Image 1 (tube, helix red, strand yellow):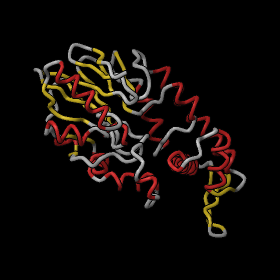
Image 2 (cartoon, rainbow, N blue to C red; image 1 turned 30 degrees about the vertical axis):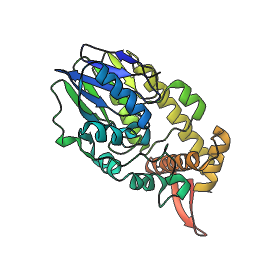
Image 3 (cartoon, rainbow, N blue to C red; image 1 turned 45 degrees about the vertical axis):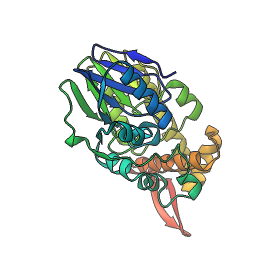
Image 4 (cartoon, one colour; image 1 turned 120 degrees about the vertical axis):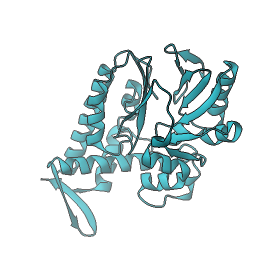
Length: 292
């Protein structure tokens, strides 16, 4: 774990629970994501210094704690700038707001103290201000969260962030965190056309061909959408649908997993309503969904 893997002439990644990427040019290293906390960041910095490179900047694919959790330590030690796209940059600067966005309101105190959910605050600017080196390109990857981005290097290596989940994740959790189902499906289709020779998802093995995994993610998304539709179409509240999804998928029943599942089920209900499959009404003080 945390070994440095060479993926191209100028491109590397660090094998870890949430993979970190490196693009190196002229002895300067651009670090793509910083892992889930200080320990991951220390290991990344150890690799960078061990190779005799200088850390140039941090590029966060998005604001979730397992991708920007090491920002604060690296910025305090190396004094480097960090960048992310749009809303993700803002949520890295104010992580409590990112958690509130995920939760749909002020979350319980135990949620705010969960380091899986809340990263340390870090100074992250919009990636539009980043002086990216030649040979490193940002690609928008909406769906998992607003303003998620991936990075394509001139070596043909694409850091795909959380645009796809690994097969073991799909089998174990089934309902993976999604903010915008339609955008997620568009991103999966777009991935198949990216001119890369190696794809490095954050939570799945690196592969030369992303299409089989993209198709498995698309199939799982359709399966969950069908489950939500089946649970909702007779006239059900969000909580009733959520209870059915949790029971069917065997989702861990703790506050963090509950919040992720609720956010994602709400996103599926909105998607199905936008598709014309469901209609939502207010009855007896609750939002009730039924077949359109």
